[in-house]
Each structure stands twice: as C-alpha cells, then as structure tokens.
Length: 332
Image 1 (tube, rainbow, N blue to C red):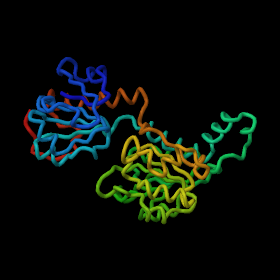
Image 2: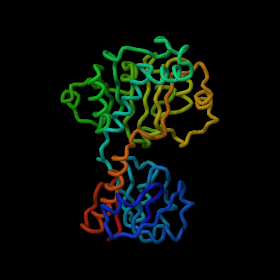
Image 3: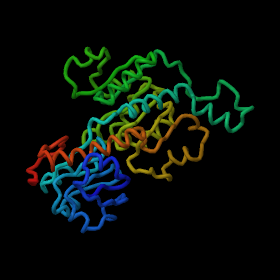
Image 4: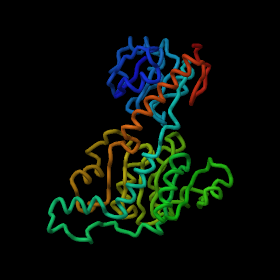
C-alpha cells in the first residue's frame, strides 16, 4: 500500500488499524517511486501533486484500488486504471466548508481592500494611514455574486455570499430543473450570460475535457467590465494568458487564485513576474494562495481518513465506495 506525498500515519491508522503496511513515498512524479513499489502495492493513496497515467497503471500488478486523497481526480487516468482492473475512488464529501469560506474570503478581501491596507500600513504606518488606497473598493451588500458549478461547494459559497447581502446567481447545466427555485437563486442559461451579469465570479466545477480552459479569452470578453474572478477549484479551468490580458486591460478588476495548471506556477510567466515584482498596474488586484483553500488541520485529518476508509470498505467489507471509473475490476 503506497500513500504518496505528505500522508502521515495517524489518520490512516485510524481507518485501517493494523490491516496495512505503509510504504511512504514523498514524491511529486511517478518516476520517483521505484517500480518494485508500484508492483507490490495492493492499494495506493494519492495526493493531487502527482499524475498517474496508463504507464503507472500497467506497473500496478497487484493493485485493487487507487484512493485519491481529495475530490478531484483529473490527474489520474481513470479509464486506463479501469482497463487495468483497478478501482479509482475519491473523497467527495469531506468537510468542504474551508474551500467555500476561503473562496468568499478572497472575494471579500479584494472588495474591501484588506490585503492592500495591510501591506501599505506595514510598509509605512504613517504614509500608509489612508482610507483611499485599494484599487478595488466596493460596498459588499448588493454585489452580484456568480458561481460556476453549484454543487456542494458552490452551494456553500452561495449561502455565505448571501449572508453578506450579495445577490447570488449561478451557471450549472447539470442541476435539475427547479434547483434555482429551491435555492431561491437566479440561474443562468450559459456561462457567458452569468459572466455578463456578475460583479464577482467564483469557480467550483471539476476539471475535465468540457471545463479545461473554461475561462479563456472569449470568456474574458464576455465578462462584465470590472469583474472579480476567484478560482478555488482547479488551475486548468483558467487560461493564465487570458487572465493576464484581462487584468492588464482592466476587464478583470482583480482576482483571487488558489490553483494553477502548473504548481508551483512558472515565475517567468508575465503575470507572475508582475505579481512577484509588485508592478504598479497589478498592485492590490491579485491575491495568490498555494492551493490551500481546502486546508485546515481538521480537514487534513478528515480527508486522509476518508481516503483510507475507501480502502477498508473494499478489502474488509467488499464494498466499492466512491468509485469514479468503470471496470471490470480485479477481485479482492
């Protein structure tokens, strides 16, 4: 059994007891894990930092299950694993309140200039003692808060935004008819319609073939001028070049970004160079956090334990839990 990356033992032991021997690999690429470790694994626990493709699936000679420590499984070739007889499971229902809360917090920080105020006062407590410093400063009440993907996390973000007096709308083509009436929120028929309406948009959709590059130059052109964009989902949802151009032109007033396609992101990209260099045109308009909206010590424990519970369910109870791919799977 090969938990990859940062997994520590207590949470996994809580779920699996003495049923498992753990082989820990603090790796970011499959090549860092020896072939004999892949071959010996009966199960794999995998963080989001590593890709696992068909080549790795072929090395998993004894593996029955890959349990992703998290929701998204876009970095796992789930069909290839299924063809190799390996079940892929995720953790879809850990406490996601941290993600929703942080997404809304990023928007609030930009709307109320908190980070800018702090930076300027810390740099010069006398000269920075001014109320008119932040480039984006708006009354929160009455802002139009748009959500792309109104599932569990998106709904939690919606409730938080509404509690601050914002008007909430969403785009999600996969929710049933009448969901908007149940939630008493406005539903938009297309992404473009939502982007043209919203003052703030947060992304809470999975990354797949349909959503890759969802926020591209066309989406930026459809945005209401001066919109704030928050990505607390997957980096591949946002084209960084388009984000750069949108910020540069002013079409995007500001952004809070938790995830990039490449992590850590490329510091040579013009947007990241401007951000790290504190260039005047971007000052106070961009907040970056290191793919951490999900993280709290409590969530860290929960997510690891739930991933281990997927393995226990299969090997002890014969139950296939939270499966995201199709078999035929190897027998246990």
